[in-house]
Image 1 (cartoon, rainbow, N blue to C red):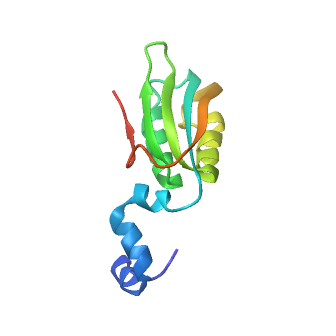
Image 2 (cartoon, rainbow, N blue to C red):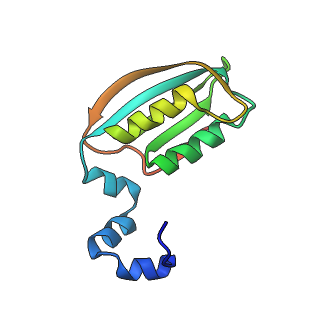
Length: 127
């Protein structure tokens, strides 16, 4: 971690990074490498264990966009978009980690495709 305070770091950062920061995550990702989109469904003990909250937090840490929600059949479903290596990191988290009290039995991924631009500007919980 940089020892400089955030304000000092912003002053010393190159201008291009500041422009990307000002335009947001979606704009920064759309100018990078090819983007991927994938739908997912997580099976197991994934409701009532803060799974959606942890998923939202992890997605923001990794730097992907999309959404997550509970289903009526007791699973959690959603979509992740971003650079391929970040999407793969999120897929691994959804398959193996989850929230501390969850139990992931299996995770299915579908509709994986390359996209030209992100459809979401952040990652959030849907109800």
